Length: 95
Figure: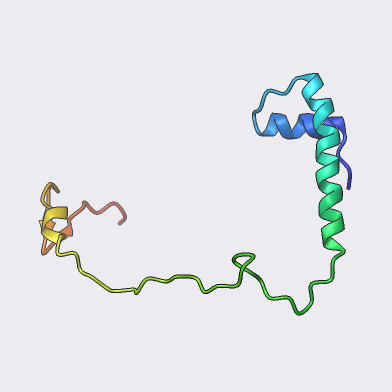
């Protein structure tokens, strides 16, 4: 896949980025270089290779998932115009 000047200008317009003619011409070469490198990577055989989180094998640190109530229900509904047992009361909008 290669990128031409029209594609660079179209993408810049869609992204709402102001790109001068000189910058657009420079970006054509840069984007083609990036896409060429990505095409080289797609040719690498990675069967049997496990995904990594880092270049050094390590376990990800995980925090314990403790369920807490917070005990803030009354504080949350304190400024609501209408409540019932810590629930917001809203007018019915659908018949």
